[in-house]
Image (cartoon, rainbow, N blue to C red):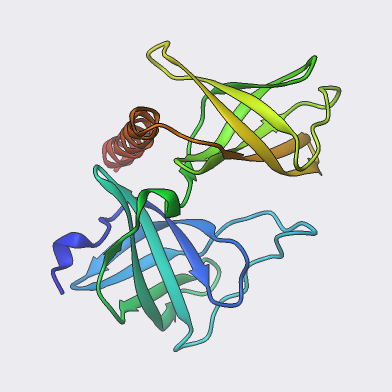
Length: 216
């Protein structure tokens, strides 16, 4: 395996275990040759996403991350858990890095203003994560409630002022402590729009890594 293909320290990643129906965010803490050490996912437990337990040695974990030309994934196995109060997962690849096809891209953490419009209703909020397949958006209480199956138009405003409008279908809408969260699946995304999304997600990841390096 070429270790240059693996994510670098400070890079944001997504972790997925076989028995989960979702993935969780993490960060690469260090590289040990072809192995990676990642932070324990710090996620807020809710009815849909339970708290993340520390895995046992040998547990299979899929690691996913964004690159300039797509979304990569690599199967890994837990070698050991490092630390006590703040555990870190020492992961060893068990197979080759795979670049997923466009429609299979996972989402990456992303923040930008967004508006969801459907019928006569409109809800403003902030993007939580974004991918070529869809997005998750946090909206405040009191905004219109869209239901799963509804067709909406999503309008995302990027840092450069560019606006991207895409047709989408609501796949999930649930309450959170600070408001509501709506997840949508994009419909008939053009190659041009998919390229724009991929570019924006990669640039956000690059800025995150630069800021982290400056802090160190």
